[in-house]
Image (cartoon, rainbow, N blue to C red):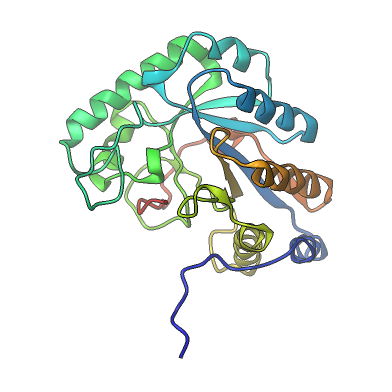
Length: 272
């Protein structure tokens, strides 16, 4: 008997096109969005990511680490109208004791202390980026303790984004997750491969179309401009281009997605 596998599902470019064709045949539009994590300063990789957004016309939500952000990043964002800023924790520091998985916003510290840091981070991004900074939290390592999540509205947050399917919660805010991560974090940060990365995309798109998951949650692409090899860059460019050209696919900006807070499920189990 073959042991169960936790590997991502597999698919190809033809399967992606076929799934989008099925959306078109049903008279529906498949919404997508794009989040890129770990920004603190201008780098050639970040310039490349923003250029890819401009080239493909796909809006980019940039998750910025407040404690490390430099003055030089604001002009870069200002010059890129399709880029919005989300808050990536406070300092992206791991506070979980081994062997627990890494987490900055876990239950290892009092929730009040964690929320105070996040509030300070909110102020930092507001000062540097103004209206381009959305009150949306992206937890480092995509992990957040329920007690911290419950207090987010009290310190000014209206949105939350992690990785994976939405799950039941009492958090009263807009939650939009990501579902496609092409980086093999357990394999030297190498590209997962088309089959695995596209498998994530097709699986979520199909589940939305068939009503197995929340059809209103856009399918999210997650990238990390500082942790991508050449193959990951090539996949990202092709995925953006192929979907942008398909009449049944539409890329949405984060300021549209997080415009109206309301109670909705979210995932707090994390990723990587």
